[in-house]
Length: 172
Image (cartoon, rainbow, N blue to C red; front, side, top):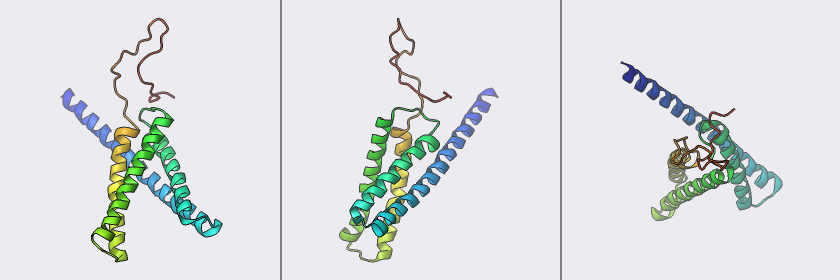
């Protein structure tokens, strides 16, 4: 049955693509985690930069590296919608998940009055897992969008530029 073959082929492609995105997302995340720790350690322990400034710089460096890794590997097959737009949304998603993580840890520490390092670390890990899921889904939905059929005509009329969004998918 041609219809069932087509559905099976498309489902297989979808799963392969999702696994590619998840795998690359995990590798990029792991590398950026190590970079964040390394830059913080270098700046704070070796250079003598203050802890908050060191964390700010290490976060900006690792976040920018993560953006590049995700744009050019994890989600490289998706439409390119502009560096400014993508990076702004990327930073916004990361800011929201940072606040979510801080809120979880603060709630466990102050709301539940827990002081145990083990309990707080479990809350931290839980917030990281939740933040990672939110980031992955947000990147797929809002930051690195899929190519869709444009809602406006793509033909150029009398030398006027097309109103359709540009996409580099499928281009060399």
